Image (cartoon, rainbow, N blue to C red; front, side):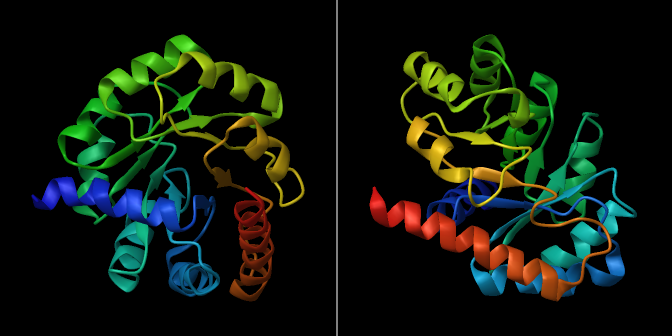
Length: 218
C-alpha cells in the first residue's frame, strides 16, 4: 500500500466507524486542538476546517499533528485548485468543497487525498465520481429533501455515498438515513465560532448518540 493510497483507506476506515464530519468554520488556531480533542473523545474522527476560517492552514497543521493517528483532518470550502497542494503541505488529507469542480477533485485524487465535493444534480454527481470523488456532499441540504437522496441513489453507481450538509441536527438525521444518506456534514448545530470545547463536546455527544441509535436500528 502506498503512502498516498493509504489516505483514502484511512478516510474510509474513519467513515465506517463514524460517518460524521465536523465542520469547524471560524475556528482559531489557539483553540483548535482542544476542540479537536473533544470531538475525538466523543467518537468523531473526521474534521474539516473551512479555508474561510482565520489562519486555516495553521489550524489544519496543528490539528493534523495533534490528532495524528486518531482523526482525519482536512480543509473545507476549497474552491481554488492551487489550494489543494497547500492543504497537503499543511498535513490535511481531506479536500471538501461546496461545489463540483473536477479540477479540484482530480488534484486531490492524484495526491491520494479524499475529495468530497458538493453537488446538487445527478449531472454534477456523475462528474464528481468520474473525477475521483470519495463521497458526495449534498449542499445546501436545507434546499433539498430526503426524497431527492432516495431518487438520486436510484440512478447513481452502487455504493455512492451521499452526505447531506447544512441544517443537519440530531433530530433530522433519521429521515435522511432512511432515504439512503451514508453520513452527514455537521455545521453550526455542532460548532459555531466562539463556542468552547465543552459545548462542542456536548453537542458532539448528541450527534454520535443519534448516529449510533440509527445504526443499531438498521
